[in-house]
Length: 192
Image (cartoon, rainbow, N blue to C red; front, top):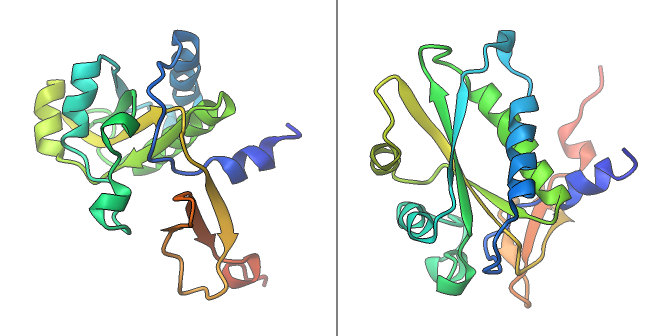
């Protein structure tokens, strides 16, 4: 557990990836981490769809939007920078129709487990959920929550202190690495 805080600090969003396959044992750890996530009343309403075939990954990618805080030419991964894997997070409405917290916990577990093995991720809610739901064969009692992109990062993403608590928009530095301003503790914590 000594490295937990370092893992939390360095697990950032990554948007450019090496074109290297993620080994099956790493994928299994990512999915197992999702399975281990806490769930309200332990109802476990989530299921997952793994997209790893190159043509299917490209199809999912075509229905996603990246880095909304940046112009498309800077935020959208180029052909040789795209993720090599997606995991779709699906809410099963018959089990629990309101499970955003469960999804957040599972996604956090997945992305931390991935980063523990050097695999970066990008959580994508900005996607064409209707098209992707059709592609995934979801029923009307299933709802696509998010797709999470995975791959070995080809850039750095790091936290910087937000000097102005109102200015938290991420940006690229001169090396085109991501800088992610975070408000300081004194700006977000109040003791009673």
